[in-house]
Amino acid sequence: MKRLFTFILLIILGGPAFAYITGSGSPKFINVNARTHIIIVGRGTDLGDSLARAAGAQARKYVELYPNEQVYLLSANETDSDEDLSGLQEFGFFNLTTKGSSFDSPDVLNEMLAFNKIASVDVFSHSVAYYGVILDGKLNRLDPKADGYQKLLGHFTADAFAFLHGCNSGQFLAGIFSYQWAIPVAGSFTGTDFQFIYENKQFHNDDERKPKGLSKVTVNSQTYEKNVGCYTGSCMRLFPDNHSYNGFWGSFNGGGLGFYKWLCINSAITNDRCFKTMAKAALSYVSVKSISGNSSLQDYKDVVLDFLCPADKRAECHSALENAIATGHMEYDPFDGKSLQCDFKGCKAKFTCERVPLINLLKSGSCQVENLRISNKTTTMANEYAAYLTGYKLLQAELAIKK
Image 1 (tube, rainbow, N blue to C red):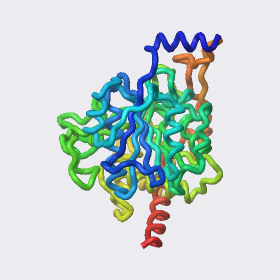
Image 2 (image 1 turned 135 degrees about the horizontal axis):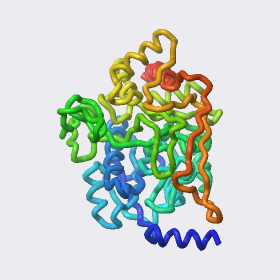
Image 3 (image 1 turned 120 degrees about the horizontal axis):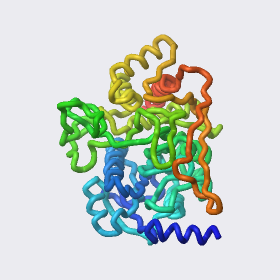
Image 4 (image 1 turned 90 degrees about the vertical axis):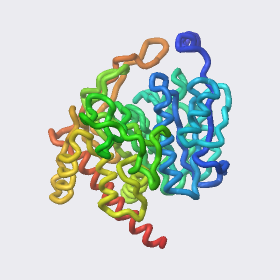
């Protein structure tokens, strides 16, 4: 009976899945034994090629920071044609090849298992908190609970991390991957949207939240060492909203966070390793400055604060977080909604969804968040900032030893 319903749903949702595309971040061909940054791009559907553009911006950061390492792309084929190949070329990818007849979770797992030194994994896709990352825009999803992703344990470098850029990726997915892979994983606890660089040299959403009287730039002169034209997608990023998620799956008014939250679930991840990895990940953020391991503390702070603070409260947020570190009073919350109290093992919250009888699929509109925080004041953001600063010191000490 379940197979019958699944077949019917496949027909409703448009039949078979598309093939997928692989590529690299530079003209060099891929070596499965080299340090590798894997970027996974799901089908954008209503977003067009925006996910691929944001992925290209991220890939460019890795190529610039780590010229002796490699970027490997796994992308949905939006149009099932060569049109996607030309688009991905424009966004900075090379050696593009169409593979298979589908883009599903086993495809992704088998591709990843071929690599022995995975340094990072970035996922740009629609996602469902309780149901996995959407790969092909239909039923195929990257589901760590069902598809054997624990097999990747041992395929990561000692300093590896993963970053899940889609909506609500922190509720379950980030924690499960962190446990399975024994690496730090960042995820969102609300919806995510695209931000662009404006003439004030800051990232803003392209809606009523954008600065009045200012336009988007056409050249990114901040994020990279060299200027990059925005036509490549390198002036945009996917970023959490500063309000609770309300969408197809439900209303998460019970709680959320307006920044990407790091989780270090597996007991093998010490605090030092967790925080140092956060600091290293920050070097590759698509942000307001191009930084490296040799950058000043202030430049590093500027990037981290850009990734923590909401666009409409940046000055206030920067000041409050610096004051929290200086005084030890860590209560600060700029989230436009009820925020969650979280540490690096999880959040004081309960996430639930109803399921449709017989077919056991999630029921749209039924998902919700029960906020279990005790205090009215949250320290989640300030603690995250403190961890970034601790990680910076640890990273600097490690780099000094290597010199």
